[in-house]
Image 1 (tube, helix red, strand yellow):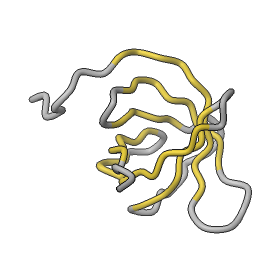
Image 2 (cartoon, rainbow, N blue to C red; image 1 turned 180 degrees about the vertical axis):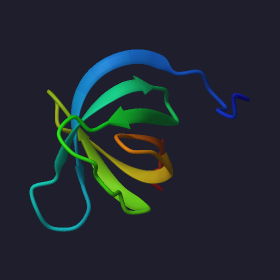
Image 3 (cartoon, rainbow, N blue to C red; image 1 turned 120 degrees about the vertical axis):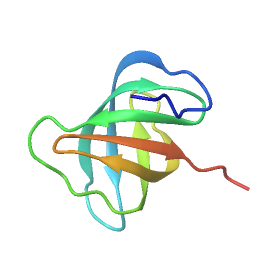
Amino acid sequence: MNERRKTSRERINGVGKVRAGAGRGTECVMRDASGDGAGISFMHRRTILPKRFVLTTAPDGTQRSCLLVWQSDYRAGIRFLRED
């Protein structure tokens, strides 16, 4: 598989929550991350992500606007959107 990322990702094991619109959101695990994006997975069920959503990371509650790049059954690759 060809690497298409502009920056390399660092392996992490952080907890987050994906939220699109109103509602509680869906918990996820951040598997790897860089300044540009992350790989996330869902532990309890297959989750269909919208094209744009907000990712909140624990424990500090940082929120990042995200764009879905790819998705498979329980995993997804996301790009962090710049806040202008």
